[in-house]
Image (cartoon, rainbow, N blue to C red):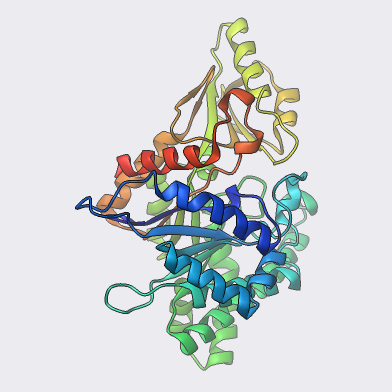
Length: 414
């Protein structure tokens, strides 16, 4: 929906369905019922047009590109007063009812499969993006992985790391060239939004900026000036328009990044936020001198240990150092008296602040929204709590009701 701070919707990676037929059936079941629970327009006369962040597997993207499927989807969007303003191109393959873990990164940006999948998504988005009240197509973005998963590589060898960054950047620049061409052909400005997360090749805002300035800009300027006849300045402008940060609030909070610092760093280097993924992580302090309470906090974290998704943990020690663990079982096994706080990559419902001994990082979401009001830095906000099926039993509720509660909570923050 269009709000005072931009477009607000939710990511359909919440719904299962790796084929287009299965995923579309889930959307047809859920979205009309969801819309019925949401606020009316400002004058109270009718529902607002409903914004969707579409997630398509590779298989579903191939099937949706078939003209008969795409036309049918466009008719359904129009009939139900819905529109696509962003897409999630991070998970390529199965994302529900299967063990995902580190395979969420596969195939990564070292592969041509990732390049072709992302190009296909942008071709679809160029068709699906609506026009505004003035007849101009709105901008659209697609979020993608942080290049790869660092535990697959010899990360401590500088030469290997340099080759990996060069290879992934070169492949990503194929998509940048496609976006420039699509803009020339369709007048659609679209951007690829890189999503840092713990244990990705890009974990933090600092790493995103370092990659951008050390690899993407120099390699991209050289390539685009030759390919499109641009000046260095025009090539840099094109890169900054077409490659942006996907600011997943959960991921940044797990790494103890403050929202104002994220935005200040990007501004310093002239880089942009493509979209904000509104999500919250688990967190808790461990009382320093109470072994019983420390054990209770650890045990509550253990109840969120499930086998489907990665739940990276970043621990803050009593010496204020950050220790990173690839998954929750690793952190549970390594727990000791030096751990003062844990933050875990587990997307938890936005409408609850506490989970027994644990809390969430949703205060960071409120801060992001307040910063957007003061210094508008994007116009795309996407709720992305995809863990409903793997939450502890007492937290599982009707999916449509849960999504409605999340969107309503965000609306109240506006």
